[in-house]
Image 1 (cartoon, rainbow, N blue to C red):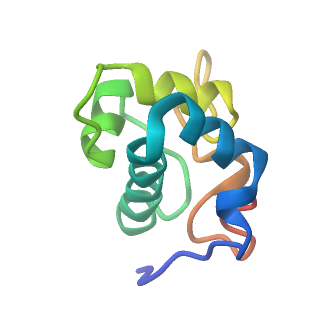
Image 2: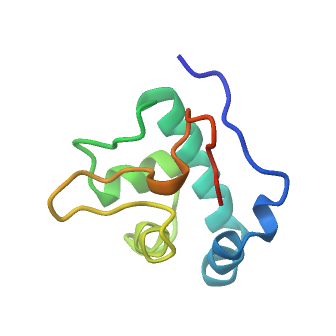
Image 3: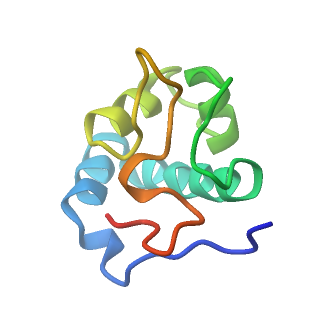
Length: 102
């Protein structure tokens, strides 16, 4: 079981994190971190099989406009969206040595 995740020191300056902050504010970035922490504890392989957008936003504790967080995470490629496969943490899957590549 994972007990931590790794972030690069320049995470908050990365264009993806900056775009997310500009779109959803600091709460959006905090919810991304919460989602990564939840995934590291509950889906360490990074595949979010069986979860829909609402489930992910509940895990991230996103309490604003439903669907808005997941849409932004997918748009900025912080989350890989289905159609044919389940959601996954994409390029920055928690629990991987290079986690939070953004």
